Image (cartoon, rainbow, N blue to C red; front, side, top):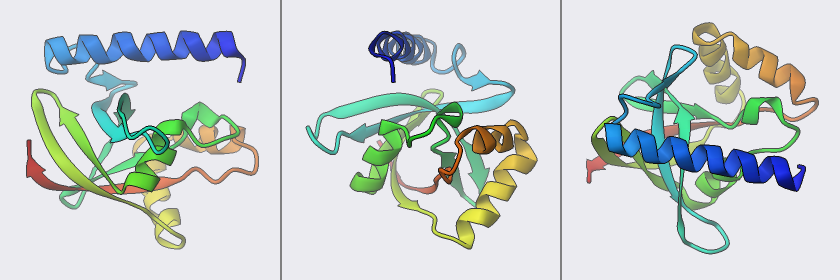
Length: 146
């Protein structure tokens, strides 16, 4: 990725996270009509907490998140960190929960991705744009409030 574009994206995400936190999700709490949470995951190299806004989908008492990166050719860093950590904090509005995380494998991933595209058809466009990369899906299960 172009270093300047990466810097712009990082600044935009930092601003979104700050506004979300200050407003308890009233601002930044949705995009394209879908709910957004703040996902905080330890970095797989540094162990430092990293927070990113992510679209999520309710699923049988858990949540689904997709590492779409808008259809880029590689998985987003937050998803790589999530897969390595297997746990995170998820803030929805003013409420924060610990969640366990597991990356869905096929055929479950296919079923979950079909559920996502039914609710948000533009994710199918992201899959097409990603070339040969299969967009990963993780299941986040709340373990306890923070």
